Length: 127
Image (cartoon, rainbow, N blue to C red; front, side, top):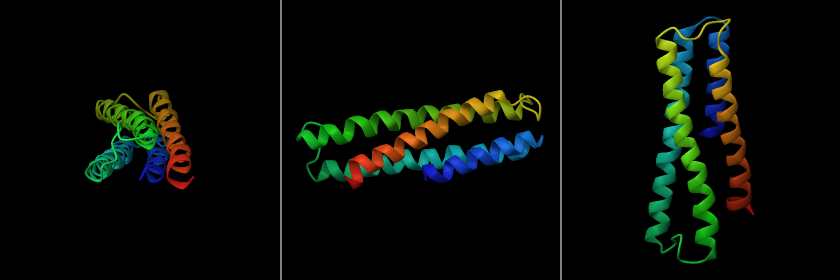
């Protein structure tokens, strides 16, 4: 979901660079939706693990799993809120093909969160 959301983020930036504010709203809305789905599924995963007895206090794995993934999830939530802020700005005409720095900065944050997830996924789920 996050890898796809990075693509939708790029498409939103591309839309506003082409002076398509409706495209920006559409793509960034999809980015926010994908980020929200990611966090919801993370909550489902936490609930399932908790029912299986794996909690932040159960053992060393619990701490090493929940602490970084929850911290990352908090950043995804912050990114979703930022995406909503970008959408509101786009609807008010804040961005144009010569005025899109705010979208670009949001994109850098969103891509950073995505890259961190790749590192976390590799370190926690694959190793």
